[in-house]
Image 1 (tube, one colour):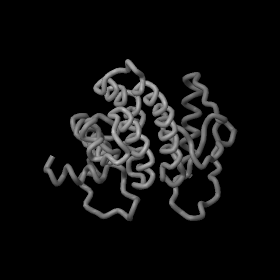
Image 2 (image 1 turned 30 degrees about the horizontal axis):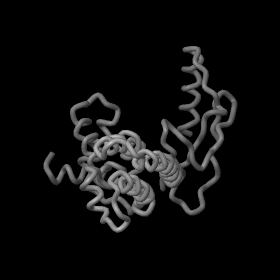
Image 3 (image 1 turned 45 degrees about the horizontal axis):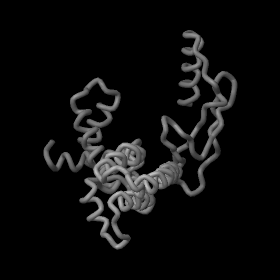
Image 4 (image 1 turned 180 degrees about the vertical axis):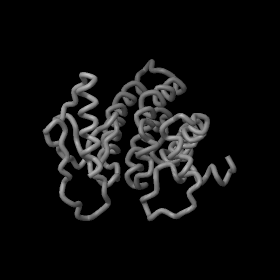
Length: 221
């Protein structure tokens, strides 16, 4: 009753401005944590039904029905694994670049992959996030020439990097603080409501920035 009229208005707008939407390239993802999801919604665009998918890639981020982020995390993990082979070759080269240069390459090539969308998928389970951390540490270990027994805290300290959870907190805090100076941003009102919200969310149902908001609130930002 809400979505179909909105789709009809979108289609009318597109006809007015000679803009064409491709229903076959569009998708519906019904987000739910239910064990047995209900029937797929029947939504149409220009008379063509929009198909439902369990997961879909939007702006480079894979969204799944239950927002567990397993698909996106696996995608990032594979990208990092491919880069790991590159670092193994370069780091072991006889006249390869120094550690500082390799670390800079790591931050540019590997960390940029995991950073993208981290504010959204960063609230995934620790087990899933650790899959990316494991590959990242393996690359850092290759860069530093460290042994397998080297503690992960030492690896992060020596390379000037951090695990995903800490990186997520930093990126989220930076985003929220910048958003506070942009009242015309579409996210400003929603973020302000969340900042002043005092209720308690069910487990694993909190908005991705809620924890960051609470931390900043305790610091009286």
